[in-house]
Image (tube, rainbow, N blue to C red; front, side, top):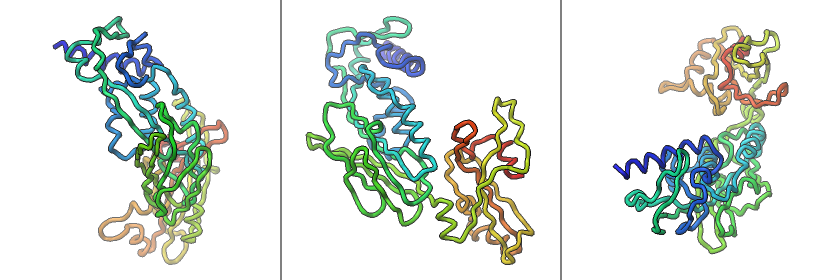
Length: 356
């Protein structure tokens, strides 16, 4: 029962402190660090255990989770710029720039000795302390997490950039070389901090991004991720002779959304018309984008949702004289209040007025 209580106490206080405070010093004030190899004491008992990231493909969410976990667990309190990193990433949503995030860290965790010998006890309702003289109570871990800080890149000409704010090294071991395989068929190439690296993809699709880091001690760490590259509207227009139109609901009144404490700004959408053989818009069927908070679908991807085993329903109805009008709700920047709006998760009233 003592072991279970200890686990519950540590798990509860760590979980509370992650929400309620800035740093592990508030959980373990004046902590006795004998036996630790680092200044980072991580609790793996949470829902998202970053130790499990060692052998999986990393995402932007994994980068953020690792950053937050290390920031909280670091007795030195060195990481404090996550909000700035997120803003930087959001500002590149519609550009051809893709920030790269790379975290190399080492951290300690309590081993089973702490539980079996009851070496951590409550000091107050919100703090813990270490007791006894046992020093071999820690396991040490090393982790590399790398990922593009965008889920979706519109446009096949991409400028990747690793800058000093998104290259995190909490260890005493320097990084000698960083290589990246961008999934364009050209293999690994050396990149430098602060130097944009241009990549031109021959087609759209999910591109595997591989990271390889060589340290000053000549040890090598690897990480994998992916980036979903989609054709931009301009590329689609050029390739397929399309006419994708961006528009606002200019001929309708703004939606009534004041009850949500939201200003009644008009939305922004984009549409294209897939005509039947006569080339005249006379028998329209409207195909409307659904819930898509990451803007993972463009116009053509929405149309492709009509694919089924017998072909494409859109193609079939067009052969019968109907025209398919596709309405997409993209991510866009609203100048009125300087906000990014994720159209695929915006108020249904605002998107409805775009349809009108």
